[in-house]
Amino acid sequence: MSDEPKTYASPGDDPLQRVRAMIQFTPQAQALRMEVTKIEPARVWGLVPYREELIGDPETGVIAGGVITTFLDTLCGTAAVAAMEHPTTVATIDLRIDYMRPATPKRDVLAEAHCYKLGRSVAFVRAVAYDETPDNPIAHVAAAFMVNSSSGRKFGANLRGKK
Amino acid sequence: MNPQQRVAAAIERIPYARFLGIRAELKGDELTLVMPFSQHLVGNPLLPALHGGVVGALLEVTALTQLAIASKSERFPKTVDIGIDYLRSGKPVDTFARAKVVKIGRRIANVQAEAWQGERTQPIATLHGHFMTPETEEQAG
Image (cartoon, rainbow over all chains, first blue to last red; front, side, top):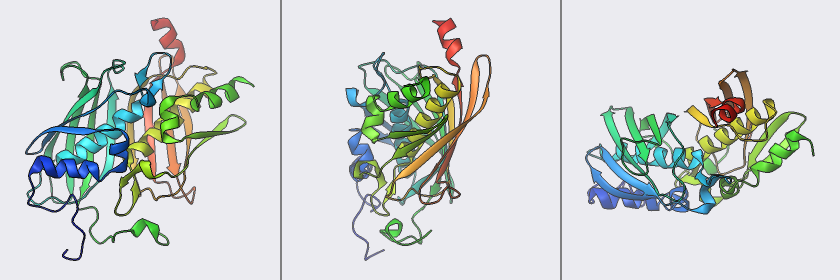
């Protein structure tokens, strides 16, 4: 580990700072201007600001489902990391998203995620997206993540050859 | 332009599809969506790998569009639920996606989609989803 650059997975930092750094290291989370607003062990809260660029239905101005997918995937991943004593990398195995209603146009999308089971290999996370209160949800997600997903993979692994 | 071509062209007018850089290629009634690699799509900068969310988003847009084509509607259906399985990390190269409409019911349609990069037989992610069929939406107002 000693020859690895200092990254979001470096332990010992303040948890909120650590997950914020994790978001800063994620270009797509930056492109969405995603923020993490609060953290507790195994739980995180965050938001994606409403912006015209993210509209999925030009007639209504409703934000695209894909924005919610990406936001909830990222937030669930950070919740899994927030559940760890020694943070490591995670990779999504699967996501299931239920859409209850369209997001309200011009409102930021808020969400909270909870890692309700952290195993040695797999973390299970639930999250809910809303624009006012969690009891009027836009979407609900259940996700599974591989824990320590980068083990045995070198930096730049995807830039080289096959597999 | 026939209705299928109009739907394919409509994707490129969706702000979020432009944000991702998605392009549509239509051959007859079969649609392939192309998401050229771009730095802002990265989720893991160390490997580097595409963000799973954008791969999921590409699959969802593909499913919605193929369903609009199959149901001869020019409106995009509404998503009820989607399940995405991640099979391989997305490399920093172009990604392609195609969808198959399994069933169009009276109210709900079932659609499957697949995303791949170098080889069609090595998908990086698959999606299955349920969507409101366009007629239902019109009746529901």
